[in-house]
Image 1 (cartoon, rainbow, N blue to C red):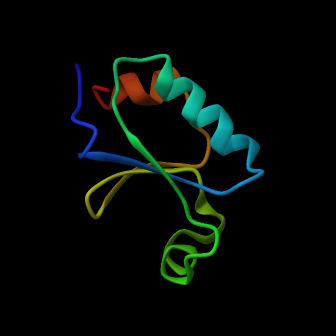
Image 2: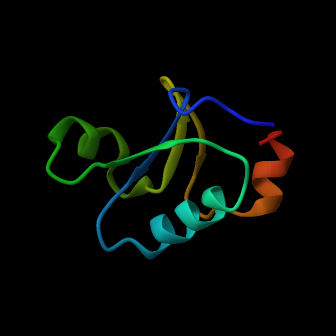
Image 3: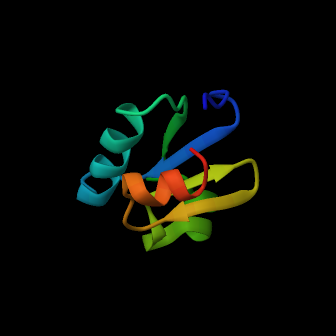
Length: 77
């Protein structure tokens, strides 16, 4: 399943090893996403804080924390 890049956003933070792993897992699948670093954006830091990595579609959080292929597959991604 290919999802439009405009649909999925991966919220990350610089230096976050879980964020790097999440991005790597997403890049290995047929999933298009936009990556957004929440650092320096007070609104995003307030919303996502230490929950990153967070995969969202619009305002809906799909996954946060530890990503795995199994979790993505369970969601149909």
